[in-house]
Length: 506
Image (tube, rainbow, N blue to C red):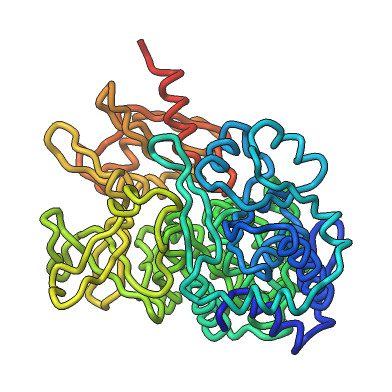
């Protein structure tokens, strides 16, 4: 297989009438999805000379996935784009990307006026009516290698300019094969997707389903505002696998809905993107005994690079390992001196292997900054991606996550991991979720708590006493009915920092 779209071809050949993807409007079989994508790809190939990526600017839908496949069938990488992105962000993406084309619909096309430049804009409805040209597709697809880009996924940059993470086909192909084998997926598998299709957590959902001929359900986004309704949705659709961000799983556990949930079909539960607290994970495990639970780790630049299949009991206050590297991936922990740390010591998690990014699109300086060579390998350069995350190997040889390099602060001479404060604060009575933020101008730690009733600072400090030292104690506690979430359903730390700016005491 030289392209991720070969997974769709294989699914079409083996399971043409299996349901491939369902959104709120329609269901496409593998035959229908493949044929729609090939018609669209033929129109793209006939109308374009540039081999640059194709931007897919559509609402989350079966059509959006068909747009991905259309770009791949035409021999080009695709760029999944948030249909709710503000105009300024769209303009920055288009400026950096210089796409060969944009696939969109009539309503969204209006947002591109004045910022698309000379880029061709195609409406998906019109592409769907084109005639497929098998010879044209075979020629375009035949020129692709598995080291070419499969997609460019834009993430937020620290400078305010989005960065285009460019991932190779081989990374997606190996990841899909690993998921199929690890979770025992078959053509009977039903995957309930949660993540937006422009977020890397969705990659396993989309290509894992294609790999095994399974059914991908694009769970209605409105349902995630009512976590107590999600188990009912899983039961009604006989869902066998979910891969969700921990915030969603925490909300479901806190809703109490799992206590009465009947989910006989659900076999595997995976999560990634944030720290999963064992208090809520244990609620899931008690409600669903005998199921496979998996903690997956990896930034957008590597997709999933390590995994831990939960194989033992943990107390509510224990941290959860992030496991071992996936096949064809390697992990190196580097200290501040750029040398590998000793066993048990904390270092920056650096990742190498088939699935890491090729680079940031049209940004060689940022690409160079993000990588490092293995200091112990002088024979040939081995490129490792610097994740900015910190970790250490425990006595079992499992990788443990210990926070962000930029989440490590220094306060009154003490080095502090905000993640350590959050881990302790999750055990506070009444706290359903927490987030620690450093207020640099005031030089104090602010703990945000999601709770039904206000939790005072003295109560916070009493609850944390014995769990963290005095120098790590929050100087301020803020209770919110709901912590803000970003578009990926993770806690929105940027919005909390803005809240601090707007509500800083005089």
